[in-house]
Amino acid sequence: MSELKIDGFRSASSDVKHRLIISTEGLERSGKTNFGLTLPEPIAVLPLDNGTDEIVAKFKRAGKQILVPAETLDWEIGASKEEYLKLWGRVEKAFNRCLTTKGLRSLFIDTGTEMWELKRLAAFGKLTQVMPQHYMMVNEEFRKLIRAASDSNLNIVLSHKVKKRYVGQKAKAGQEQKESWDGTYERSGMNDVGFLVQMNLLHTFNYETHNFRLRIKDCRQNMDLAGTTIGIDDDCDFQLEPTFQSLGQIVYPESSEDDWR
Image 1 (cartoon, rainbow, N blue to C red):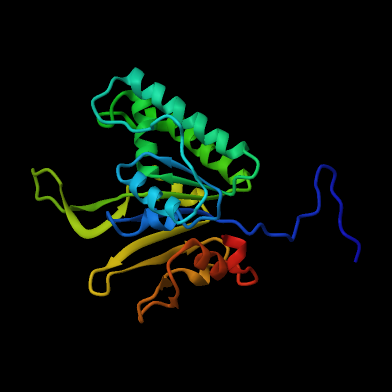
Image 2 (cartoon, one colour):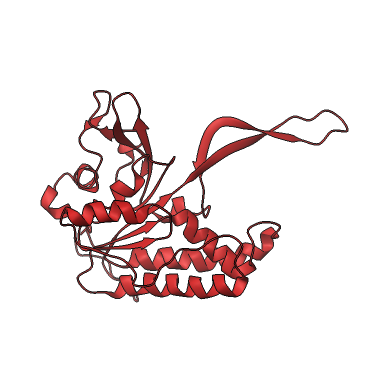
């Protein structure tokens, strides 16, 4: 059968890029940074969180090709809006340079939580008492960054901290509604990130076996993987080291470990 043609359209490609765009989340010291640094090298890292440098140094000593910005991207609450705006300019410039650098294979943002907070501070000078309608432009500008990264050929990991999830309780007549922690956690960061990436992961640490593991929350390439776990503990679905190489081969079974080094 001859293929239908429409003016202004082209035939869709059946080729699939062997690369992954991931949002990962977890409590402190659950393996998020270690996982991000198993990305295919050379890796560019945007270190916006305390503690990234020590783990980067460990992987660098092991021979990993890792590049970090020459200027520090550290920041603290309490600076002026002008200082936040200047620092955000450095972060955005570094981010865009990574997207256009030939030979770079991966970008690791540690963390997406701090990146989102810095974007808000650069726009408003504060993180609280900002009306929801004022976020429209900031949200769209952040979405554009993630979309631009998606249009590149890079493997990308945005790690995120988590926060307690609070739910409302029914209030008695004349009383204000109260919220209480429901015992679970949720990603701390820009709300739409989960929709913009290909995969969402959850990192945990088993304090009995002292092993990291990750759970695939969802996967655009293969939703059958949703809910499965990767780790070396006996109860994991995939008994493999929870690295980017392991994940890449699970998502793309036709690929090899060398494709993800």
